[in-house]
Image (cartoon, rainbow, N blue to C red):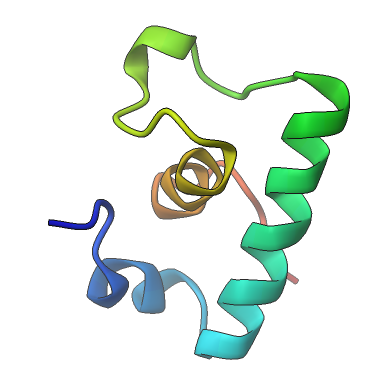
Amino acid sequence: MIFPSIDKLLLKVDSKYKLVHISANRSKQIIKTKHLQLPESEYVNKKELGRSLEEIEKGLIIIK
């Protein structure tokens, strides 16, 4: 099963295209800076893209 689910993510972001754009940018940022918003042990996913989606789902990334 994919975590977090697309249904939960679309409650935070109004379109799938915006979700892809935001999560891709955040995952590149994680790769470049190695900065995570949560302690590493709290993430379910091991890869940067999954971690960026988790941050979006938890409301750690503010979408304007």
